[in-house]
Image (cartoon, rainbow, N blue to C red):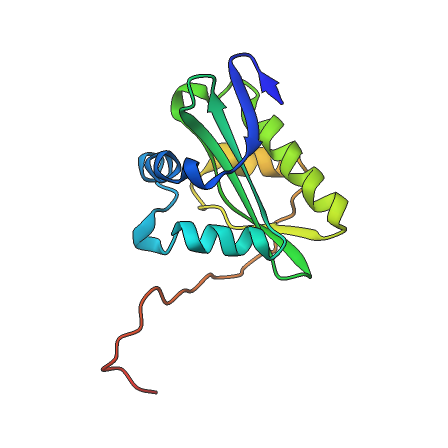
Length: 148
């Protein structure tokens, strides 16, 4: 799929280093958060998918990572470099991500920061519904000293 001088294509392992740079630059994640090439490959092998947006030069400027628990798909690391925002590229990338979920007959769920108003508007325009009053918690690392 081409969008001016950009292509939306399937992630390949060779994309990893540039992908991590993108995620760190736009604050979506990185290796410190467990976004390793092995984890990405495992999620894809388990029925997930990752779209990457590349310039013809090969530089990655956007991503959409879909994982699954076989009940629903989860949209992770959806983002576009700042200089490409406002061009309609996010809508195209989201539409392709939703098509992937539709074809698999699965719901799709995501998390978005409460202050990311542009993303919230985008998701609402694509009929995502706010679940209301849910708080999100995570343990990124276990402290061996802490016991229940």
